[in-house]
Length: 284
Image (cartoon, rainbow, N blue to C red):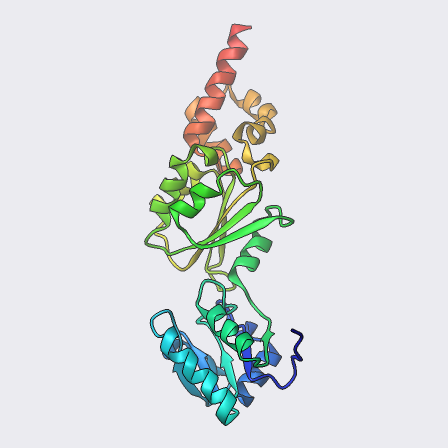
């Protein structure tokens, strides 16, 4: 079935993921023209609408009431010509929320709908990560069963996580031998003042967040298996000249601290690499 995207009865509108000024002009215009806005949390959406002087009726649409809301929305569209917009608290609707169920209902009832594109945390994080973007898999919020089932996948893996679970999630990733040498990127507070992109192996990241209290919303990205950045020894081999220069001048512990700062590899891993290198040098 083909459909026109003009004069739709449902608009799927992406909203900012952090910086409120990232709202698109078209998104603002659409919210000003619809009759009702479906949202996850009226308090959060009200703040966005207030910023752009938009005054519309808000209806909560989430996992808890989806089965009761959808029939009402479909009925209002078909019998009263009501025009709706669907928004999430942040980013693109349908990404880790039940919006797809409403879209399916529109398809079944031959109702016109369209998407008003904008910010998406998963895509923004992929861009910031520096990891391969030709093949990637978004698995929503972290789930150990999901991760285990795709541990052999040769693609960048993207997942969401909360600040109170970030360390336990990294600990679980560490427990999976398939990700021991993986380069991991953790991004927090995207588009905000304190946006931070942290790269390294899993030990380095655990150490970082044990020393720095996790704040904000997080996106975790795991590098593909074939990515050269995955192997710690590959990274450390690029620093052989510096390590050899320092090895007879300062302690292995101090070398580990210095190299860890630049490579984002855990100090213990660097220490063991340097110790083995030192043993091989003196054995020759």
